[in-house]
Length: 609
Image 1 (cartoon, rainbow, N blue to C red):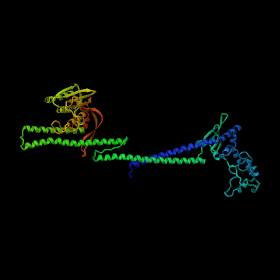
Image 2: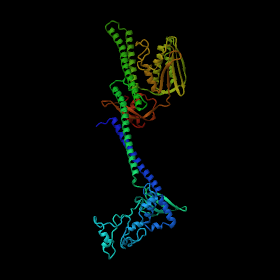
Image 3: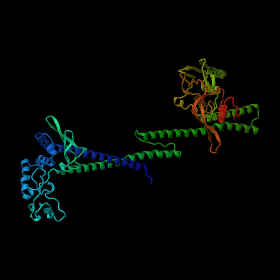
């Protein structure tokens, strides 16, 4: 089963919301229960203030807690007497006391023979049974029957004194009930401790978690502690109803929060999925070759940035495709034109239309040389794109190279009445390929000479500025429009609209110049000259010493499995001989054992490829 992005988002949000709501609900319920029980405990502690007052009054009279410790029945009786006004809401003390059956009334309902027998009662009253009878229990008027369904038959025989027939032992009158023990649940949670917190009275033994201790102070001294443990359940009906209402409210709040989380998750997932699908649709268009595809997303989130990056990628691919198609058209045109002219000349010579003279042959040779130069330029560009263009880096005097390039153009400039202005600083040294740099200078000077009007001048400035070498070549009108400056270094681009060869070449010279300059860690740009023509600026960052990255070799294989190159990973730098040219470097990289072998080792010599 395939779960979409919206389903996964809903599942994650649902599980997260459920766990969060359940956890918060349990925590809130636990906090409420403990807080509410603590609140009830504090309220009960205020309610048992009469018990504390009664204990303090008795302590002042007795001077110790022996009256409670020596008489177990004194503790519940004292609590009952102290809590008598609290039997029911709205009952006055006099009414509560009057409603309580007196001890004499209870004893009057017991036969005389039972009132005078047996050991003393729990509060020191006369005996209520035969000498061997168990102590009197407030909860039961008589001991339980031997068997269910036969109450009283064995009780009388057991309670009758020796020598008396059981039938002579009278029973209590009908409807007799012993006085109930009041506040029994409160007594189960209440206890009395001495000043050292040793228990004196109460059913609870040991330390109780959540117990509230109230000090009993006499004459500014703590003589004891009255302890009240928290209730383990809610006894009051109003408190239970409040607890149930709180639980229902908590349940509804949890369900509402979970529902809202799922609804928001569905809305967010749908909106997010719609934006992702837009990017995916654009990517599918790119894979089909539609480079005009664009993704329009509004917002400031990561998906919007992804859409913008996608649009930039599509634009770059569209430009690349446009350049590729234009390059194919330009190459085919540049090759067809000289080939067509040369073929027409040869056909005319073969057919005898034109005589085969030395001048005709030299003309054909010139056209073939032009075609060869075009092919060489295309080959250099291909090598530059693949990073395989050969360079021979060595320390050189750039000032001397500049002067030599200008000297070779003096005759051509004189023929066209163009003056040369030189401002070349001496001692400009750098590491580079002298042949490639001379190729750049010849191309730039040839362009300035070709496109400058007669009577103008060409100005060359070379100087060191800010740890860089600046070379500027400027000429006189005509200039180049500002919109065309950025495209001057594009391949096959020429400012003139016609494709004739009256002035321009194939439009590859400046592209090759840029590749060579960038290979020398330099930059080249074109801008309008202050003298009305075009200015080309070249900046070089001098390389102090020739270095080569320590290489990690990895063969680059073609689809047929034949190694056609190597991959290079730069992990450091080590010096290399400056006299190495591209072929020597290629040989040592192709055979790394010759490159890495010690000087005194007799390693095998490999031929130059």
